[in-house]
Length: 79
Image 1 (cartoon, rainbow, N blue to C red):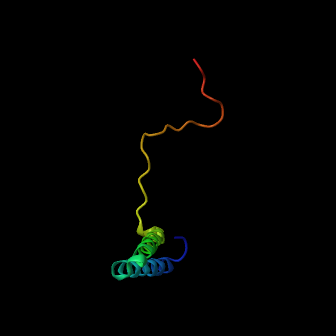
Image 2: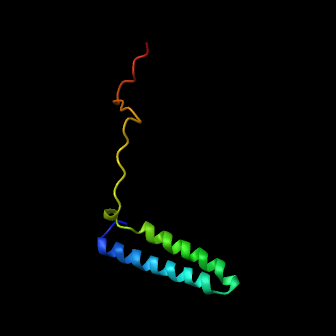
């Protein structure tokens, strides 16, 4: 998430709490309500993961040797 880091962590905590609450509802609720609560739990936990501040996740390493850089301009000569 972009913005102040404390706000991102509060959003993670809120979404995670809602996800856990819905998981408990899915476990203890009536049979008709369980499926709906499970879907809401997955959505809440997924939103918590997406709200992680960028500083909490290590960026992936740059690709090595997968693509060769070709300078722009003239196309390569044909032989």
